[in-house]
Length: 223
Image 1 (cartoon, rainbow, N blue to C red):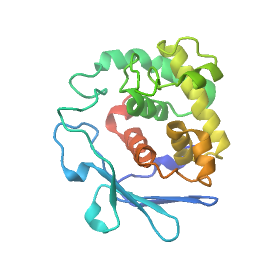
Image 2 (image 1 turned 180 degrees about the vertical axis):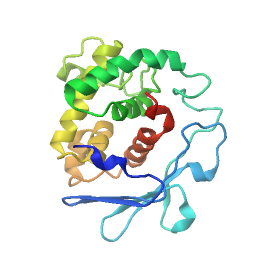
Image 3 (image 1 turned 135 degrees about the horizontal axis):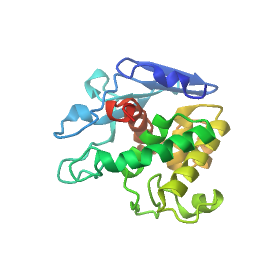
């Protein structure tokens, strides 16, 4: 199964090797709901001499850790499914059957789709990024056109297009979820140019463990 290894606990060190790519997630524990912020909630990373990228929220473990993702403070927290200003659970539950159908149709775990949606838009179907990405799964116009999405604000179309793109990325990278997520964030060509590794972009290096942490969060698991 493409994502069977994701059932491992995030509360312990994890190292995954796929071909020439190896990713280590070290002691990464991110709160599912953020009401206060401290340094331990941020994500730090470094690449060692063997090319292994290490992620942690505990930078004191190694002086090589550098900040790659800073958890927003309460004043600038991007609305998400579990913030006071984000969509209500009842709103999210309206999307559950749409996500379940897309997952069934394209052979993905519905929880992974939920995790991507939470990271991309916080379940806001009207979200628009500064780069022009639109909707729940933040499709850029080129991706929307590629997958036949006429209206990216429409939840059914957006989720169908985003799920198909994620499926194709998983096939392209031989089931490697980290590379698929990196491709979803930075584009598949960026992953290829990086030698089939996570591109060294701070946003992408933070995005991958963030989505994986959402994948394991109790909130996503209940859907």
